[in-house]
Length: 30
Image (cartoon, rainbow, N blue to C red):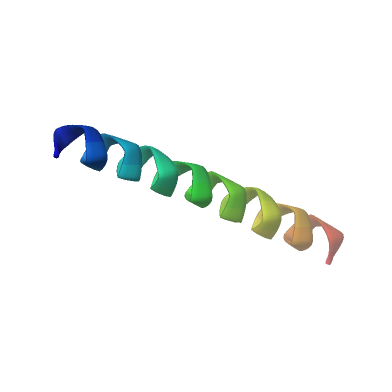
């Protein structure tokens, strides 16, 4: 259970990072 939560948190952080990067890139382009 703890391991699953840990993996889920890591996955969410990675998605968050990707979204932030993409939004930042689009913001800089605009």
